Length: 211
Image (cartoon, rainbow, N blue to C red):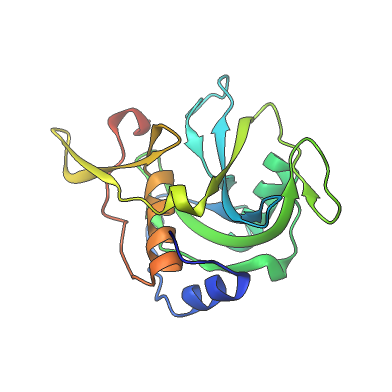
C-alpha cells in the first residue's frame, strides 16, 4: 500500500525537494498541473486526461492539464489557468503545493510541473462540498482519477536506436503512459510518496512524441 498523502505531507515533501530548473531560452515555457483530488470515499487521486482525438498535436495521448506560459505569467498561475480552461476546475493560489523538476520536451517546450491540491471533486453526479469537473470537450476526451495505489508502480525503461537515453513507460490503467507525462508522474511518486529526490529530466520520450 502507498503512504497516505495529505495536503500537508505533500507540501512538506515538495518544500524539502531541491527542484531543478532548465535554462533553455530557445524553448517555450509551459506548465502542467499535477492535481490531487479526493474521491467520494476520501481517497486521494491524481487527475489525468486523454487528449481529444482531433487536436492538431499529440491527439489522443495521455496528458496532465497544461499549456504554454503567457508573457508575465508564472508557472503556477499558468497551471491553474490551464486547469480551469481544460477541466473547469478553478483553484486559488493557496492550492499550489510546490513544483517538480523542469522537463525539456522534444516538441519544443520546457515544462514546469506544478502540484495542486483540489480537495473533493465530482464528475457527472454532484456531491456536496465537491468542486465539479467540466472538461472542455474540444480539448479533453476523458478525465481519469488515478488512485495512489496504481500510481505507486515501478516504470519500464526501454532503449531505442534514435537516442542514448532510456525511454520511460509508466504502466497505468492497462496502458503505458510515456514521457513527459509518465516522467512527471514518476517523479511525483518518488518525491511525494517516498521522499526520494529521483531525477527524470534525462529520460527520453518515444519517437512519436518528438513532433
